[in-house]
Image (cartoon, rainbow, N blue to C red):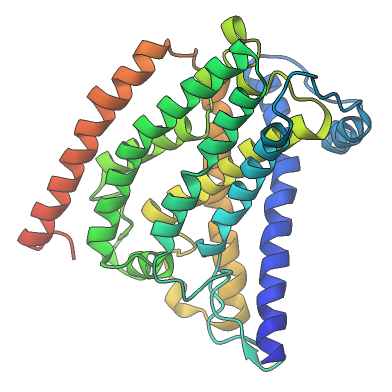
Length: 351
């Protein structure tokens, strides 16, 4: 019993530590990537290649004066960034990062590298908890008693609700094909099988439309360009968090990067085979664990870079364009994908 508790606690610490480390790493990648795309230098003074810049930024935010405007609704004002960070951290417990297989530690079986392996409704947990993140943004805008902050919060709530519908329909296609709400089962179904002897049986192949819809929707859900209308500096002066400073402002920044990691991990898990890789059946034990982590890490890094690449390559949409794309573009495509999956399963094209 104690061994199982220790192993579970170690999983929580390792995964949480990895996610928080990725927040700092992505802050550096974002700035260096922006400089690379726009032919600038980027951070290059603090440490080699500016690698210590995230640490310097963290220290700066920790020691910055923490101002709270006099006219805010103080309780909700302080609660909003806590909600954003808490929700961002809670979503990781159902995502499988690697294969534990038959490895035992202190006499307890490691199992998959996942915090909650027996949660049979993992996808529902992700969708339910992930949708709570909008409360942090809306409360931040409303409690600030600033009309520009309020407009940013209202824009974000409309945007997130609109794109959640398309995202959920895209996920439903994967769940229909997998026959399970457990993300470990979704990953297991995509591993070890091939089409035409060479193409991995990842969901992205038969559900390309659903994959595209999901990727576009998570860009909107994470408030990233070209969908960052909640933070449109030209008319909202940074949007819902304009009245926040010091670590309260940093909390919103951290939650955005954590949501990026969650979104990228979900894309990998649902459509690109998760931690699986061709030829994994020849491995077991520690080699399988290491290779599965490497496989997941490479896929995750690609989609994290995609977030950065798109942000510094595309202009921001107008708000009417954003809503039109969600309701008249993605929602019909997501519905079409769901119908296609049903027909393909009936005809035996998807097994």
